[in-house]
Image (cartoon, rainbow, N blue to C red):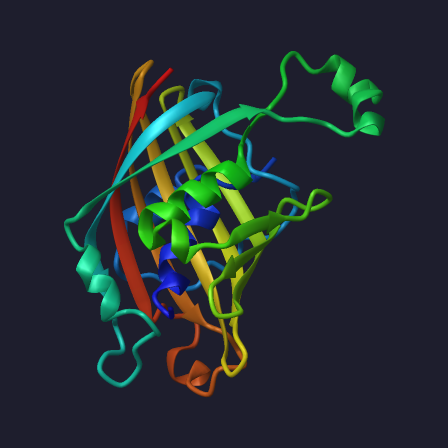
Amino acid sequence: MKFILIILNLVLILFLGNAIPAYSGEITDRFANYPLWNFPSNINQRSQDLFYPDWMVGRWKVTSILVDQLAPFSPDIVTPGFESNKRYLNQPIDFNVRFKPQSFPIPQLLSMDFLKATSQPIVADREFNALNIAQAYLGKEGILGIKINPQNPNYQITFLPENNQLISRVTGRTQESPNADEFLTSEITQQIFQSNNQFYLNQVETTTDYHLQTADSIVAEQVTAIYLSPQDPNYFRTINHPVALYRYQLTLSRYK
């Protein structure tokens, strides 16, 4: 079950997630520097959710392919699930996701700022997306349920067999849009995997570059970087450097 630590990063950040804007080209430069990454300390949590461009609204079939997998500190330090995740290299994984206009609580609906808005922001359908992606990797029997805090969409609990849980909290995010057909995001998530006899904590950065091809087609590149938490005994050996990197190619096709 340890391999879900990496798999469910995709659940959390690929299609979950008003982010603070990045400085021009900041996220783009990050892709250019792959795999020489450091922990992005400039990403802070200043927003409740991630807002997507209008061209992402609707339902999509996604094909995700893991094309690269690195463990910079191997063999001395290897994250749980790294070896077993090699089974996914160059293997297409399909699942459905959807994006929709954000639903506001009553007080926000009545606010002047909201009344002045020209349109509702587009957000991910977190529970739908998380469940679909998890089932694509783990099977329907491998996932018992997902609970998202209705008051705080940055907090999620994934319930797994044998009394296992993955608790995830988004702690920082940023975004940039160099042009009308490109949208880049980066999010930091703190993850806690716990069971009756195991506890594992790490930090995950997921950075994605979406490109609109046509009204019904999007391609994207994504990198997930795993960082040890300060509580890990190996933290000071890896400080601010990822212990695992995963690079994905994504294709999104609209469906009715």
